[in-house]
Length: 405
Ligand SMILES: *Cc1c(COP(=O)(O)O)cnc(C)c1O
Picture (tube, rainbow, N blue to C red):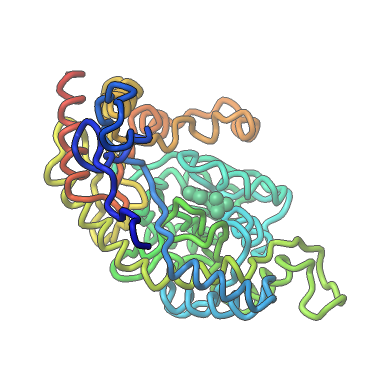
């Protein structure tokens, strides 16, 4: 080591180590300056950022070293811990994606060709897709303007003799109106399910999402509030449903080569479960930070409509979604190009207008959904934001909103 200079070379122009974003190799000290220094770009604030640390890496390494990587003890432990953590100990079944979880949950609940399942159109396409994949018809209904979740009155108006169930989405991490929807489901003798893909830890009057429906699905995709890499968790109300989801996940087998029903391979690996188990120990702190970030944005943003929260609702801010009343797309572009703030639009095209799902909804008009799809902007709210980032977001939104006014 002697003679080796461990001090970082001085940056030729700034007299410091190269700032982030400047990828040129600095000239050796005293050597010629080869190029002019370009202005240092401001760091881009991404709309989402999965947090994967040494603990996750070590957990994966432990599984890899064991030589047993397919579904096994890590998955079983993850299911138990997830159920205890989020859904008051309800049985939970891990699968290889949230979409598979919805699909298998619906099949296990008996949804089949000829049935109708009421869903919002203002959601990720996986909600309607999973209904369509069972052979049933997704029936798209409108949302409430405040919370972007299913409008109970619209749901009741859409019930027919073929309605098998109602599948609300806790969109952006805000719980849907589960009390009203439960009452409607009970009154009409139909089932209630939950798409909780975005809502780990959300609750209504203290009751966690994932405990209202016959089954609920939580996604574990990297941009969700916690991740296993890819994956999903199905939480279920009864042991019979748990058994059926497990059968469908694994070729219809409980015992090897005694296939009872026609099933899939939707198994989670122990590698993914090991990541999920570590994330489970951190997700509450991340959610707390999301909520604090949201409170800061609520208090400081100007020129946009901040997201209301329903009475009794615990919002976990998978997205912090504002409305921009004028030229939403120009607003998003200016935030990105002029202020390096990554904002997202979830979702620009309602499901009933997608080429894939529109055939289920000929001539349908959902006015509240259409307006929302044209106005929503999700601002960064993830737990990696620094307070300087939050200040920048507020300043950027204010400047862009003012310029557009
Ligand atoms: C992410 C998501 C899904 C699907 O989950 P995957 O894990 O990506 O398959 C379903 N519904 C909603 C509302 C989602 O946000």
